[in-house]
Length: 308
Image (tube, rainbow, N blue to C red; front, side, top):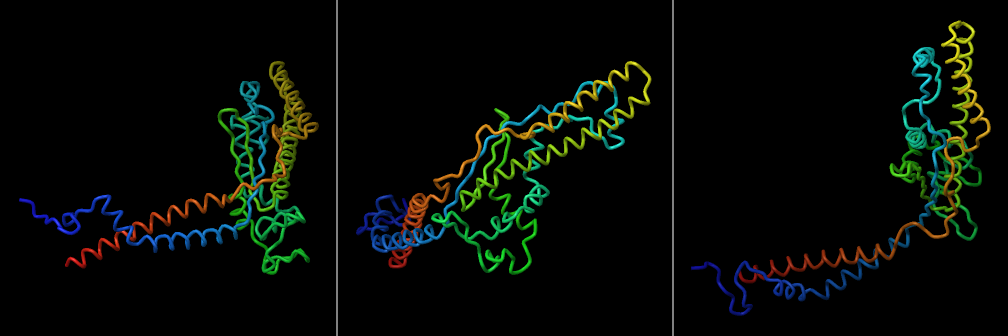
């Protein structure tokens, strides 16, 4: 014989709540739920309107060159000798795209970018964007835009890197091997100019590095050629010298030494985020569900208390 007792008024057994009964319990609090949802919508709308528009500038780039190690270096054994004296004969098995991506992500590269005017304040002190004047407004409590001075100590590279790494996205697609770079900022102009600066300085720094390595390799190879009398080894060294000269010439004449633009970044006219309509929708749905659950538990507990 069942221990549950059927309530003659409600028609339901103790400790049993069906869907229809749950809706009846919630319906008793419908006015409070509606008011709560409206308050949540208004609060969300006010909060969403305080958020600044974020613009995203994108660029798609192709890696210049293959970056593969010369077989002559491996066969001749000069690579190990060169490595012992700190000279690179070029190449290496590391993927060039990976080097580029990690270079852009590094604190060292950011430290170099921060040497340019207005980069640091635009990263860490930008407060709002004036669409009409196409200019940034800075937080005057930490940075004076008129005097271009920090009111206290300037933010460190580590502090700037937190913003940099959060707003920057760079990766190499394993399918097409293209490198995709994007940067988010409240100013569409700064986002575009910053991506352009990243690419220009990356190409320039890697060009300088390649020229330095090529010159060092040429000095090393020419000294070896002078001190070597074996015909076979002299031929290998001559071949390596030719390749280093080609590498040097490429670095001299190629502006897009590391990355070539497939799609250059633009000054975007439409914001990337936030989507205020979606925020309002999801917060309203969330508040409605939460209030319904609270109303259900409230009515269920009150019913049990009255029965007791």
